[in-house]
Image 1 (cartoon, rainbow, N blue to C red):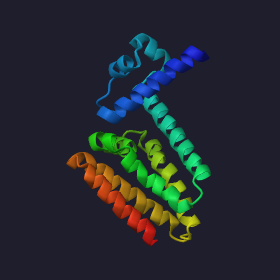
Image 2 (image 1 turned 180 degrees about the vertical axis):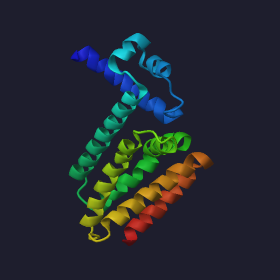
Image 3 (image 1 turned 90 degrees about the horizontal axis):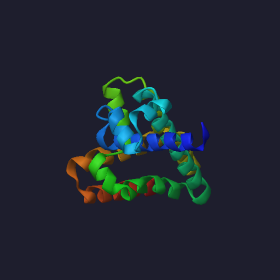
Image 4 (image 1 turned 90 degrees about the vertical axis):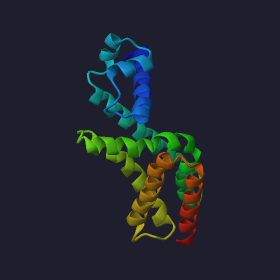
Length: 188
């Protein structure tokens, strides 16, 4: 595709990623994406023939980013319990976006599930990236038998906070719940 083509494709995926998060997949049009990417619609169709193709590219981009982030945490944070805390800290680090839009993974997968979009299973894989990594961390702190159950529970806790944060728009709710999750992790 060449450097310019790769750059244009990245611009489209970046723009779509932000729009899907902020206004939802179903409420985002080709025109919205083309405008945000600063490309003409005709040029836009050279890279993607359908919004579903863009969605696939967004999901894949997110999957790669999350996997890279988790690998970096595994390499740079020596203790598995501290790695789990890094995961929980995402709620605090992204709190301004979370208070307004919720979780980027949760909001997308929920919207796709409600409309029975064929990409919903692919989007669910984003949670599986985290679940597998969390399972490894719980096993590393000695919870081998129930590592997957604990990983799923931590995902549920985080998604509960992510769901209610924009409902209540209360940053203290996030901080309070992160403290509860930290206490739960300490008790394990």
